[in-house]
Length: 469
Image 1 (cartoon, rainbow, N blue to C red):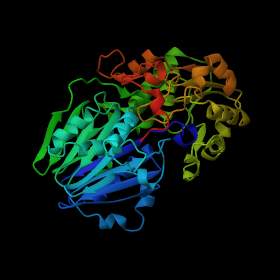
Image 2: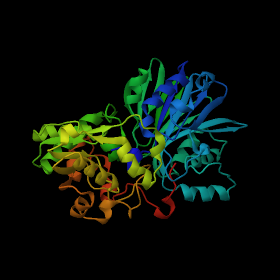
Image 3: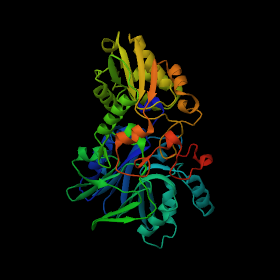
Image 4: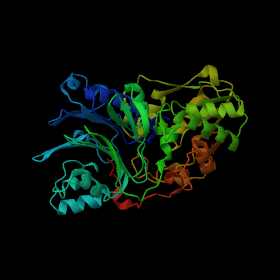
């Protein structure tokens, strides 16, 4: 379903490159391919070998770099960021990469994720004299790195990373190094590639395709990559690791042409649809998916059942960002602006509507009604994921538990609220089997906390409201 109108949004996307004469331009195209991960702000910082300079702004990457700003960013290394601002705060000051200058050198930071102990660390750092310039939890790392400045950067990074908790894929650039770190649980996807002699890193492998880079491997949980003119070195900053990537990366957030841990996202979603068809079959005439992320699952459902897949809902791709603001009124109006039923396909038909999730239920109710208004005789809703009953604290903008419809209602009550003839969700076991990751921590190496409440890290709920980067 559409993130802008659904209240389910990924935090951001990061891209980095070291050792290419057109680093800024390559970062621009890489970020363009990651635009789905954040549309409210974008920025690029480059390293010309002597200093770090950057440009950032509010809006899409094409809007931020629309007046020749890219031509002024010369250098052979760059990091970039596209951002979705959750309740942690919008505004220019929070747009990344964050860039800091001091007498001992410059530092640029780009971060995908959310630190669950940011408030505690901020209070501690402020008692020690720090003055924060943003409301982003990303800035916490910069202040931690300034402690014990007499030690080498890599040592300081390791100490700092062991103080923070939560989800993070960090890119840290200085005049001499690009450091890449993934949290001990590997919540967020992060991949390493090569473009000629240059190294590239990105939140998703689809960014490699657009810039012509070759995928090498995924960054491992707890791993610290050190990239410089001397090459690439891999170290670890902790050995207490586990694979617990966010399940919603496969279900919804990542582009279908990306691969995570060697698993193609489109193929995983098709498998979800097939598993859903086995778990919750229904007699119907046509299967349709809610564009865009649910189309793969809908195809899988159709293949498994033999019910024809049809394009029963059309997405309007020419609506601007007006509806990205998460107000309920704009969400509801945005449904009709973003989606239209195809009357010639659904009229007089029993329709199976496949979606990836239900958050509040408002959007689902509107889509079901639109299909009925277009002449559908029955609308059966199938969700290619388990019910979301818990908030996410690791960088996804989900509602509070009170606002999550599945946290407060039974499936039958939800069916009645959205006006469907039937409603069913994919089971947790079905989800794990569909993605088929080769990890054995009991959940296929995935975080399932939003479905079952089993958070992989300590959670300080009193600190987490409105504290996302």
